[in-house]
Figure 1 (cartoon, rainbow, N blue to C red):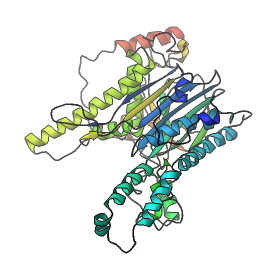
Figure 2: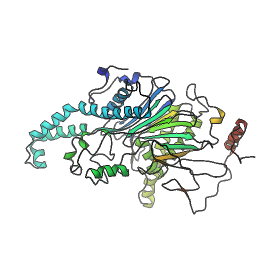
Figure 3: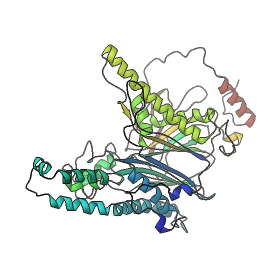
Figure 4: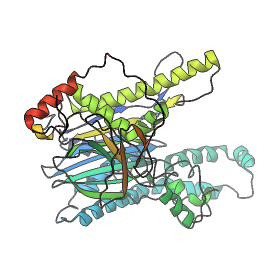
Length: 485
């Protein structure tokens, strides 16, 4: 671990050699990423801005693992700072002597708040310069007059405002002595895939989307005297690390000026500890570019389910966890691009109304931590040993969300002859969940029938994998009752 002098204290200098780069990497995890992209008619790849996502996956010892994804905005500066400082604030002795769930959750909470405080201190020099420049400009001048008389001051203020508006959302997962804890601010997500006794793979959303679709966040803002329905200054998230303009400088923003206190906060939502047992398959941490790109391209309201499906498919074919994560990201990127280009072409030919994704895509980062999911083609060290009784019959999937905070995302379940929707919850956080279903899942997770005639299944569908899994389950003695051939 570094000394305090080695931990970043100023975030506006480049980091060519990060101390976190020398920490042990968790070999049971992998990261996939793709930089943002503007879509050009000639097909040439073009980035709108340098990548603003950051991540880490660290193995401290057999008892402690730490993972994080940071999604920066208005630059990568805060994400870079938060990545390094977060590791320090969690692993530099703070966990010593902490055994209860509440103690560990408090360590994570304090880590986020300490990172926020350290970052704001690191930009003190720029805030002081900004305040001086503002004092040098007479108050009785119009904006036009200021621009004409003090163009150099206006330009410097513009640069400083851009720098101090930099911020990041974050999701951090800590595994300590067989228990999982997740903390987040903003819209980065954490999904835990677990299988139930029947082999149904559930996808539980362990993070909370802090945005203006979240009823709890809207209520918090209303209690501050705000009625916001679109943006909070220069961002859509209601919690983040950094971005002084919507915190210490919020009085300068007309729609936020009436707030009783800082409207955007760095207080994380913390959940845990969830036992990591044989039912836990894998964990997914992601920046919002991952699920939002898939949502906008496919118009799905079950994006967590769709993400788990993509991951399961890549577990079957890839040989490394990095390969799994990267393949999922690449596929989402292709889907988003192809849907946009298809819609754009249809508008040119048929004058069809606009729809689908916009002509750009955000940065995407996906981190996958494997617990107990088989990788048939795995290279050594990439797949944990799995007992036959632990392998899901057909790799079924299902998803859960924090209720009342964001649209429910689902997952898939394949049973003997049908699919189903189930509900589960942890005492540590309210959740709903839903799965593949012949009906439509309501907000409370109850399945409702769809009054439409399903399309015919092509006769050439290959069920050989299903029968092979049935035979393996029969041999292992885990075949569910009622399946017999």
